[in-house]
Amino acid sequence: SVSAESMAPTSDKNYVKVIIPKTQEQRNRIQVSISNNFLFKNLDEEQYTDVVNAMSEKRAVNGDIVIKQGGVGDFFYVVETGTLDIFISKNGNPPIKVGDYGPGASFGELALMYNAPRAATIVATSDCILWALDRITFRKILMENTSRKRKMYEIFLEEVPLLTSLEPYERHKIADALESVTYNDSEVIIKQGDVGENFYLIESGEASVWQEDDEGVVREISTLHKGEYFGELALLTDKPRAATIKAKGKIKCATLGKKAFTRLLGPVVDIIKRNTANYAIISQNHQIVF
Ligand code: 1OR
Ligand code: 1OR
Image (cartoon, rainbow, N blue to C red; front, side, top):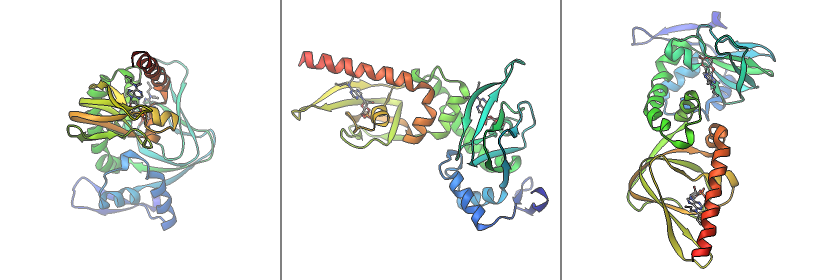
């Protein structure tokens, strides 16, 4: 609770560390709750400790409004257990459900980042345990990383054809989860037959697609360019990688892990599946040609 809060000064004049006493058991639960959350990646030890110290445990029951659209931003939330719905009302129209959250999700960053009114209403749909981080600690420790990444990928993601149907906010969530990787000429990015772990968007450069047929003959079958993607098939089908992908010159890719791919690209999964039909058509032509 707020009354249990104690403040300790730091060297930074504008920022006093918030320390809300908690048990080791609570600390462990926080660790599990944030372990897969991209906003908490790349924190050094001190930042991590400061965040955990500042968090307060909040409980909500089915029907509780945790955030009200239009309200003032006070806390950022991480879900430990339970489920919540997201509602948005536009131009005074009745609120429409636009999504939901489960364990590991986080929300409430926008109002804190931009000093804006709450952009959505968040309602508990079951008993929830939430970890709340105050505005000042959020801004001090988590904001810079988050806004840097969103800015860094904003223009690129706007230009990826696959993602044009998404809301800007949905692309921001993808940006939170992306990690860039570079490869030198001829380096193997994906090996045919391997287990699939990541999805790739080409940020710059080109990649070649190679396939080994049943006779063991390896052929280069196509080239992929900036804004195109690969590595989706194995993630969708749980089958081995269907082709080998190699760097054609220096290439930079933005990658998503399997979990993030499933969660964040859900709205475009039908487009992705439709696009994979092209592989079948081309492979049919292949058989006719060869
Ligand atoms: P907040 O501080 O504004 C409400 O408080 C939170 O709802 C917000 O931060 C986000 O963390 C979360 N647009 C804006 N905010 C959203 C959205 C959203 N979804 C969740 N939040 N959209 C829905 C995208 C599926 C865009 C709709 C146009
Ligand atoms: P993946 O996860 O199977 C290899 O890993 C990736 O190569 C695959 O996802 C696709 O993203 C990409 N057939 C199968 N996979 C292809 C193909 C392809 N092209 C790119 N990939 N064909 C070529 C179509 C031009 C059909 C070949 C017969």
